[in-house]
Structure formats: structure tokens, C-alpha cells
Length: 171
Image (cartoon, rainbow, N blue to C red; front, side, top):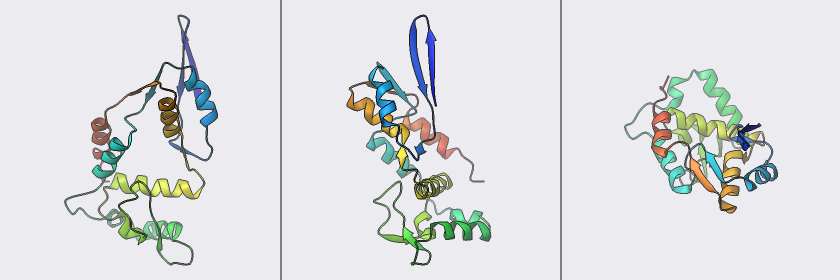
């Protein structure tokens, strides 16, 4: 998860992991980031830019629902996994954009209007959350770096990240 790179008496640490994990690495990240001058992150992680990603994840032109591309068995399995116990096929589905969902929506309704990549990431986030993967490693690193007054440098712009997501073929 952490690689040490040394050259000409200089030392760097490369941290790579899944975005969400079942354990917090806050104390380890704090130890490494404390000694850093700069912290490079995948892209801008502030609320304004994260909101831009969420907003770009919704279709505006009435494209088919993501479930229309999946066979009935897959849709049934997704529905079963995320159905709220005791409430049929309804569940609290407040994931990437809490303001978008009011209370308990059906899974179908919750994903309605999402681009396929947004629907996938929303389901993935919900699924990993059910497994206890509630810690965002990159967000922890970002927050620690800001708290320590480190220079945080994004490796990509938010426009580049959104362009990559929007370039994922629907298939």
C-alpha cells in the first residue's frame, strides 16, 4: 500500500489503495503526511469540485434507465441486495448526493436519470458500505494534508476526471 522511493538522498512515499476501505488508515497517513512538503492527490477533492462530479453524473436527455441494459436476473439480484429489510424493495439510498434522494426511494427510482458510471459508482459505494467499507482513504489523506497546512496538488483537473467518466461507453 505504501512504497518508499529514494533517489539522490531524497525520499518520497507513494500511497495507493482502494478509495473505500473497511479500516481507517488515519494514524499511518498522518505519520507519513506530517513529514511531507507536498501531497499529490488524484484530483480536486473539495466540496465544490465533488459537487461538479455528482452533477455531471445525471443524464439530461432522457436516456434509458441503467436497468434497461441489464437482464432481469441481474436487476433482481441488485434489488435483493439493496432492499431494505422489512420494506420490500425500498431502502434509504443516500449515497453520493444526499440532496438528490428524499427519504426512501425504490432502487429503480434512486438510479433514474443517472449516467451508467454514476449508477455503477452509487451501487458500488452502497455495496461496500454494507460490507463496512466506510472509510475513504483518499479523503482521509486530503483532510489530514489540509489540516497540517501541506500543499495539496491534484494530478488531474476536475474537467479531466469528468471527461474520463463521461467517456466510459454505456455498454
